[in-house]
Image (cartoon, rainbow, N blue to C red; front, side, top):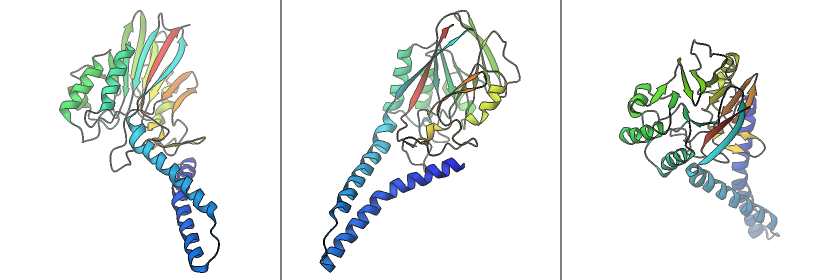
Amino acid sequence: MSREELIGLSILVFLVLTPPALSLLALLDWMKARLMHTRRRWWILRLALIADGLLVLCLIDGFLIEPRMLIVTRVSATSPKITSRLKIIHITDIHFERKTPLTDKVLAAVTREKPDLVLITGDIHQLGKFDKRQFRDFLSRLCAIAPAYGITGFDDETALKTASLGRLHMMNNLSGDLTIRGTPIHIEGIRAPEAPHPDALSISLIHSPDAVPLAAGKGADWCLAGHTHGGQVRLPFWGAITTACDSGKRYEYGRYKVGQTDVFVSRGIGLEPRPAPQVRFLCPPEFVVLTLHPE
C-alpha cells in the first residue's frame, strides 16, 4: 500500500470513528451533569447528532443506493486515423454473480447506444461464484450487440468463450485487426508480440493500470483499463482510498495522457467479492462510451 493510500485510509477511519466518538462524549457529558449537577454542554450533543446523521446517510448511500446505480460516462476525442465517427463501449469489472436489475440496466443501456465496438477489460464474472446459465444469457446478449473483444482479469477464459457463445474474441497476449466503415482498427492484449500498423487506430486492452507504461511504450493510440473500481470508496478532494495496484493512486480513475497514448481507467460495474464490503461511495458503477471523430 502506497503512502497516499495509507493517508487516505487514515482519513477514512477518522471520519468513520468521529460520530460514535462524539456520541460517547455526549453520553459522558450527560452522566457528569447527572452525577455532579453541572451544566450540560448541549453543543456536544448537537454536534454528535449531526455527525451520526451524516454517517447514517453515507452508509445508506454506500451500501444501498450507489451499488445499484448505473452511470454512462462519455468521452470524446478526434483522430486522424478514422474516416467516420466511431462509437466504442468500454466495460470492465462486471463481477457477474447472477442476474440483477443492474445487469439488466447494463444490457439495455449498451443496446441503446448502438455501438460499433464493445471492449471488455477483465473480471467479467465473479471468481468461482456465478450462475453459469444466467451468465451465459448475459454475456452472449452483451457480445451480440456489436463486435466484442476482451481480456481476462481473474476470469476463466474457457468459461468466457463458452458463455459468450464464441462471440467474445479473447485478446490475452494476442492482437487482431478489423475494419469498421473504412477505418482499420488494431486491438491487442498488452503482451501481444505484433506491433500495430502506423495507419491503424491502435487500442490496447489491459486489466490493471500497472501496465499503462508498457502500453504507452508500444505506441498505442488508446489504452483501456479497469481493476481499480475507482477505489469503490472515494473521498471528496482526495479520490480513491485504495486501488489494489502497485502504482497506487497514479492511475486510479479517469482519463490520462501518457506520451502519445490516451488512457482511460474505468471504475467498472461490479464489486470486489465477499468478504470485501459490498459498498460504493462517491463511485457509482459505470461503463464508458468513447466517441472518436475524424480530425
